[in-house]
Length: 63
Image (cartoon, rainbow, N blue to C red):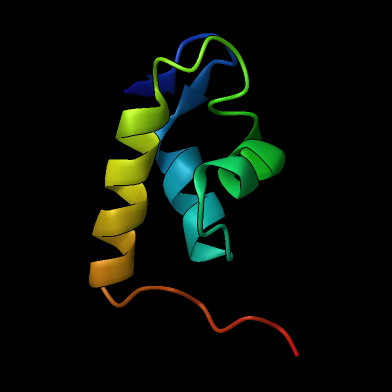
């Protein structure tokens, strides 16, 4: 399913960006382009960040 129609970014791509270290809407946008157009998807991106953060699937940040 698409999260961001403007940039044609699917949910899996957003989740992958979060798992690789994106912690807010801006960093998700930098990683995959989601949320950088009209902004309608920002609430869904926030929901995915919350889901992934509580799922204990985040990779440790590189030192």
